[in-house]
Image 1 (cartoon, rainbow, N blue to C red):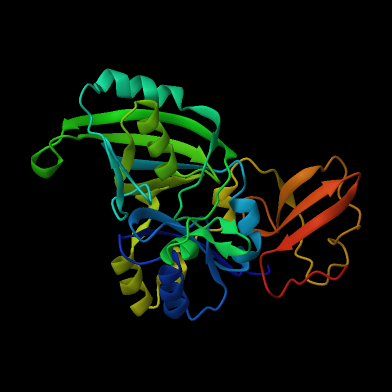
Image 2 (spheres, helix red, strand yellow; image 1 turned 30 degrees about the vertical axis):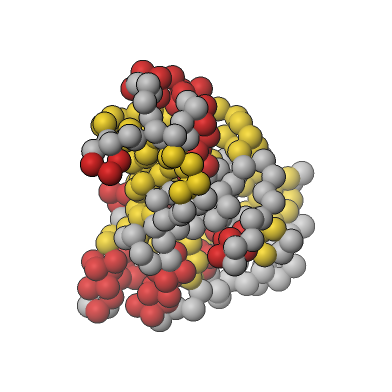
Length: 310
């Protein structure tokens, strides 16, 4: 059987490092150049970062699609807005949260579930004239960002606290938000605060789920580094199949030449849409492929030794 090259590594990113920093660590630990991730976490945010290694990098676009849901928990301030929509930014408005109740927040949160339009944070990875918005913001330029459609699948309030000390005029709340790719929790909190008439900003943000991957499944960076020192980190890679639980399995022998499984080649009868190609039932996929009209239309090989020839 042709071995699968690489896989998926769920990690817990602490506050501070960038997502690219974590990718650099994994490259060094595994001595592997081909490393990426499924969805950036800002340096000020922590939690689950799903890293893809080796041949799994080819499947990244299939593992993190527009339908992929990501769940976050955020401690937020109500009564305050910043230019970055989080505690790292400059305060641009401080109205206080007098009169805002837990019930009013719960109603505002419920109203912000579903399809909606959202202006991304000024400090975001959105491109403006070919440049990242956060790069413009660092130079003091206010990037013109247009509202775009996003989908918030679920949201709820988990806790409520009155502000104390220097934040006595504010209210604090813990919210859990599940949204699809392209949506920003920081912008969502800002909009909930504006709906309440007082403004809102994120104080602490942690990602707990990406698609089928839970934060409880992830290694800390310290654990990953220790396993790497023991030469055992590669053992902890998941096959990409675990992120595609609903995809049908088609049993086919690995075809490194592309003679039988390549674009335009005949597909097995009654095969349609995206499937996992496995050498034997229940084994990790050696390729992901899409069939239409009785022929293969796309083939994503998960092993560098199984290059397509088509």
